[in-house]
Length: 491
Ligand SMILES: O=P(O)(O)O[C@@H]1[C@@H](OP(=O)(O)O)[C@H](OP(=O)(O)O)[C@H](O)[C@H](OP(=O)(O)O)[C@H]1OP(=O)(O)O
Ligand SMILES: Nc1ncnc2c1ncn2[C@@H]1O[C@H](COP(=O)(O)OP(=O)(O)OP(=O)(O)O)[C@@H](O)[C@H]1O
Image (cartoon, rainbow, N blue to C red; front, side, top):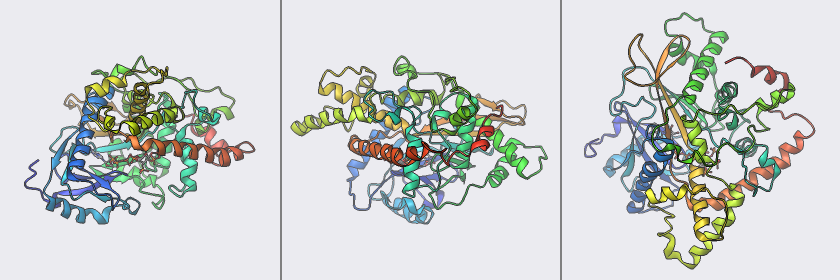
């Protein structure tokens, strides 16, 4: 990229989250990722540069090691002309969802991250001419805490995502409770994964987006977004999954197309080679905690049919979901066990503030930082060193609980080789695909007290409202017989 000759008209708004905003180049396969801040939060250019450089270093030295070279794209920090950034900011402002406008794009430093556009296949730099479909999933936390520090029994039964749904609906963030449960997606059991993906398609919230040729065609900006329209989605997807087939339109066609999409995504999620040092945690946390969440409509439907809890079929070890789950499980103590250790580090820093640097609280996220994360002992010897290791592991685990997975699919021409990319078959076509992970920014040390408070709020709200109601009648989330039969199709 020639930073000297930047033209805002070559870039278009692509998307944003709580902390960054992304614009995509119209022709080339690159995006620029800018940081966002609340209006009055002034940061110096040097601080912003360091923040971005930390993101790159953390990706390179930590996440690539854990998740594998192929899945992680760290990008690089670029310095852009301030005039370009200001014009770009003005140009995209009208496309930003209102709910995200509480923070402003950083237009003062001129720094941003330049990354490959993961909504396109990984050929970098130049866009492919073949059509491309991309599914982005933010799977969230895929396990139930196993820590003995957990004080609410409910946390050993119902996963955080399912509990949090109730608080989110109560506060108006989303209109309705999703049937998605991360434990179903991470189960490795095809039926459960199928159910999880279908549930995401029914109620996408911020956990699912679909792009066609880089354009968002499915996904929900906020609670005011219109209801998901499957027939419109199927219309977009039909040429991908039924290219030369005169499948009539209508509900039958919609169902067939959605089924194909879900099957292909399930297969892709279960695929993967195991390269690099990503197995570092394999002998670590392992599969612990209950295999199902009691609030998941899938497990409820099994119970309602008198069936046993499904076996944990397990994810293949090379796949990205497996690796992500292993990193999430670095949260060995749960926030309840972690918080007192955070307080221990805090007390130490109050006494010795100059030690913050030596403790690598704000970086550098280098090889030494990574090595310390591999110590999975939970025997507290009362030291600051022990507390610090658990705090850093917790931050890394929280990062993995909030990242997104991007799956890009491009139809293979008949009989054509796939340029050495992996290929996934569907019933009427074949796709070359790539899987990547994004939003791997290490969660800040300062967010730990917030996590602690939020955890209490989520559980208390759930206990007070939902569980109390549930004890006397089935949750409204689960509409009896409909769900009992829905999930048990062969996939
Ligand atoms: O706490 P959670 O689980 O609600 O996760 C937050 C996300 O909310 P979600 O529940 O996924 O809608 C939240 O996503 P949204 O802004 O709601 O789209 C952010 O990803 C937030 O991370 P950060 O503070 O921006 O680094 C996330 O905060 P962290 O907890 O990961 O710090
Ligand atoms: N390299 C990329 N290629 C394509 N799209 C991207 C890329 N990076 C980010 N995006 C898009 O931009 C959106 C926002 O990016 P990201 O999730 O990193 O924001 P964030 O503010 O850090 O998120 P959060 O709200 O989780 O803190 C993503 O959901 C994704 O759709």
